[in-house]
Image 1 (cartoon, rainbow, N blue to C red):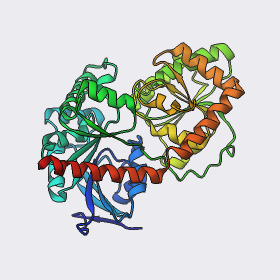
Image 2 (image 1 turned 45 degrees about the vertical axis):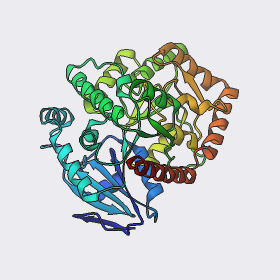
Image 3 (image 1 turned 90 degrees about the vertical axis):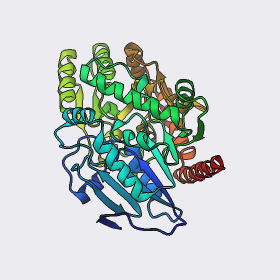
Image 4 (image 1 turned 135 degrees about the vertical axis):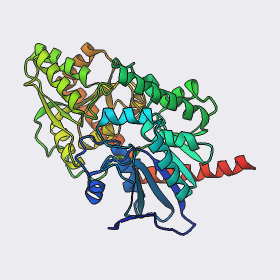
Length: 421
C-alpha cells in the first residue's frame, strides 16, 4: 500500500491521462491518515467505490479535488496511485450553518482560489465534475469552466427539489440552483446513466448536450452471504437522513402500519445533523412510533452498514428526487428486496424485469400499503429478490464500468481536440 502526504502530486510519465475528479470525498481510511475530526455523514460513498476501480492503474492518473471536511486544511495525499487534493474551504470551521454563511458572504472566495491553484499545478487533460449543484466545489469550476476540458455527471437536480421553508436554507438553495444553471447551460459533455436525468438536462438547461452512458460501480467487498444474517427489522432506511431522501414520509408510513398491524420495526442507517435528528425523534414521539424506530446512525465502515441493512426484510427509499442511488445497488448485492419512489433513474432498474417495487412520490398511504404487500406476499418478495440479484450480477459489472469510463474520457478529450480545429 502506498500512503504518503506531500506538498505536490507525484510526477507520472506523460502517457498517463491526468483526470481531475471535482467532488465531495469523505472516507474513514483517508481520514485516519491525515487526522480527522468526527464526521457523521457518509458523503458521496459512490466516489469511494469509483476510487477502488482506479487504484494503481497504468493508463490514467486520477486527482480528487475535494473540500477538506476532515480538518479544513490544504493537504495533498497519494494513496495506491490516486492523488487526493483536499483544500481549505472556509476561513474558520465553525459549524455547517455558519460555514455556509461565511461562504455566501465571501462569495466562496476560499473555494475559488484554492481550486484554481490546484488546477493550475496539475494542468489536467480533463475535469470530471460530479454534481454541478454542489456549491462547495462547483463554484470553483464555474469560474474556470472555459479554461479546461470538462465532463459532468449529474447527481440530481436541486432545481427539482421542494422549496425550502427555512429562510436561510432557501437562500442556500437558490445559490445552488444558480450554479446548477450556469454550469449546465455552458458545458457540452455529460456522463449519465439515467434517461430521466438526460431528459431534464436537455429540456431545462442544454438541448445540445452530448451525453455518454455512464454507470457508477457497486461496492464489491461485500462479504455477507445472502441468508447468513438473521432478520431483525422489517424495514431499513439506508441513505443520508434528510427530508429530500424521504425519511419523514417513511416515518408517517410506519405510523400507518403500526395502526394497521401493531408490530412493525424500522432501522435508520445514515448520518444526519443533530438538529434534524432531534426533529425526527420528536416526530417519532408525536406519531407514537418511538419504540418502533431504531436510529443506527452513520456507520464508520461500509461493512458495518451492510450488516445492519442485511438484517432487514426490505429496504425502503422514498426519495423525492435522485439519479441512480448507489445504496440500491449495494442492497441488491445484500439480497434485500427494495421499495422506492418512482423518481429519477430508479424506474430504469425495471427496464427488463421488476427489480424494485415503485411508489409515487409523497403518496404516504400507498407507500405504507406497498410495504405491507411486499412483507406479506412471499411470491412478490421472492420475485423482487431474485430479479435484483440477477441484475446486479450482470448489468453492473465493475470491470465493464471501468472500461466504459476510460472510453468516455478518451472520446471527450478527442472531441475537444476536434472542436479546436
